[in-house]
Length: 113
Length: 114
Image 1 (cartoon, each protein chain N blue to C red):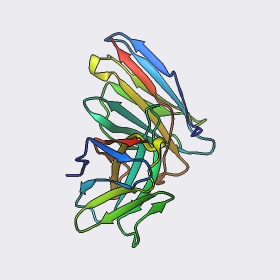
Image 2: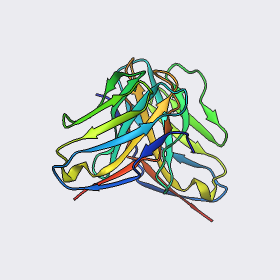
Image 3: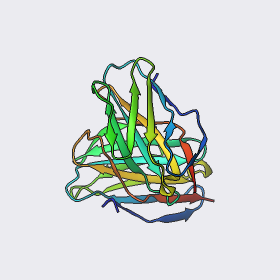
């Protein structure tokens, strides 16, 4: 158990809908990272937050947004969902802004029908 | 352009033998970091090992070592004394320059045979 929690574990929804994925980092970790793992795109970095502020942006679509709250938990919002958004979404956390070892949560499997 | 290439989609190894998983990278930044992650069938991602571009020695973590050949731009993972529990997907990744983005290779699926 990495200490990073993600909810929900599974999510099934329809095209055009909006969902929110939640991540709680390890106690004391200030950075949260979001990743998408899909069959066709592989593992992709989406976005990083450090202590509430956006630090880095990867291949995140405009339909997606994220934020990190004062209690350091983070939410990834996915809107106008398409079939291709079906994937495993991981959250990871680290103590600082640029640590080498990232601790991953168990992931949220999103299925868009 | 930054790129990570893992050319082995799947590998088989006999239990207790060593295995090398290949990874080549491309970046024009002189400062970068290379990572290996393991993803068992249960799905979680587990950090294994890290090598910085300026590190003089190859990184080692228990049975894992990283064979870093800077001139060849390769960062192969060596697993010694393979165990059945090593059967998993392995990803090579890179973070370069002063950035925070990490890019991943396509992965290599390792099967350990009893």
